[in-house]
Length: 197
Ligand SMILES: Cc1cc2nc3c(=O)[nH]c(=O)nc-3n(C[C@H](O)[C@H](O)[C@H](O)COP(=O)(O)O)c2cc1C
Image (cartoon, rainbow, N blue to C red; front, top):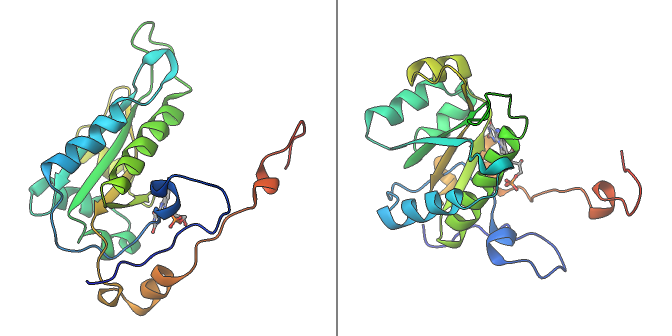
């Protein structure tokens, strides 16, 4: 594909490009993700903050063509399977649900995984990659396929790769691919001294 689709955030704020430019495509090019880009994104996740520095995130990653990639695809809901099967890299994101130090439940685990995924996504975007996070997953099947048990839980699957040609998608997915990105305004979610419902 010659031209990348730009869905740059419409904002007057001086945001860094990786935040402005990031969006979630469903069409991925066949180009594999290089080792350097992969290591960069995992390293970015590594340096996220976490409650008690517990670092409760775990990842399973697999490149297209590897058996684990197909195993992950098999656990996606059908609406995600159709496009995510073509992603060059799939990442299962997992939390460790209790603290190492005392075995108590870690109520920040999902939060901290999200911070790590945020780092991973923004670093990867800066390196030219695109990501599509998915909650549409049969999590029991996924946990069973990779023996994610005893204090660990899968949370999402991420499709990663380089932007592909929207013409490879069904008409419905293509129109979603080209639709503008929508957001609440800042005033709709951030209250100065008051709670905005
Ligand atoms: C936790 C999470 C779960 C998501 N699950 C799905 C999913 O199962 N299928 C899908 O197509 N998109 C999924 N998305 C993508 C969102 O729909 C998308 O991020 C949102 O519409 C904003 O669009 P943008 O990322 O292009 O700005 C998910 C995103 C997140 C963060």
